[in-house]
Length: 281
View 1 (cartoon, rainbow, N blue to C red):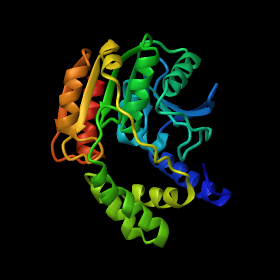
View 2: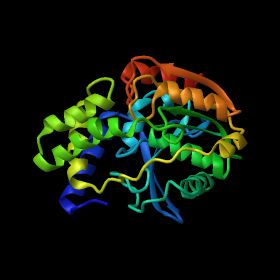
View 3: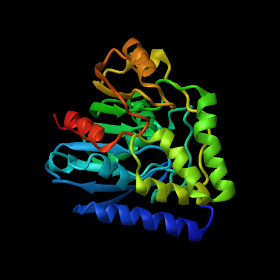
View 4: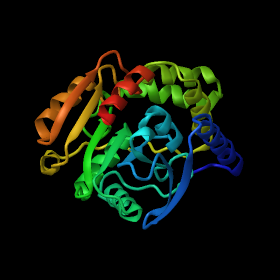
């Protein structure tokens, strides 16, 4: 998925830079799954209850750790580098249309030998968590989803003009103003690291432009794990009001749904802290 050795080195340098900035005591865990080597960053007391964090598309585990920066105080945190993303896991891309992501995550849980695990994920990470529940939810205690993929989709024309075209313009011109324009439609607040990281990713990584599916209502109805959902009011990818309306209709195990007002797809620090408090509660 990395287009060159130089590009991979530059992206992973930013990965390491972000991880170092968090000042966490951590260890790397490597799990050999049937889908490829998976890198995990583990932090927090091993006696604490387990939580798995799943980052979004074009992301990495250090960003997930920064998003919910205090979880290590109450949990044993396992931040997973998703396969085929700009991170340290194997570059084998799984299908969103079958049960591959669910099987992969359940292999990770089995290898870690953890039970009654909480899962928290943002965006594409939400799809992976829901796929995990579809495949086998027996070891999952509860899940917290933030602006998740896989429940509803937004207007594709809006996404093309506000997200896809600025991205392509950057790839063509290498002018950072197009990255900033792209992120202004997706991020509630400006994020300097995201600008730096994605400026490299857009040029040096083969991104996945496959349309995101939505969960079948019958499968959603079979999930029994408690779900806490945070939807973003101004999310052009997965609109918040539309998401909550469908979630309340199809998930019998939906414990709580919250519409984050004034939030775009990527939440700001204040909104993330609100989500974090809910997880820690």
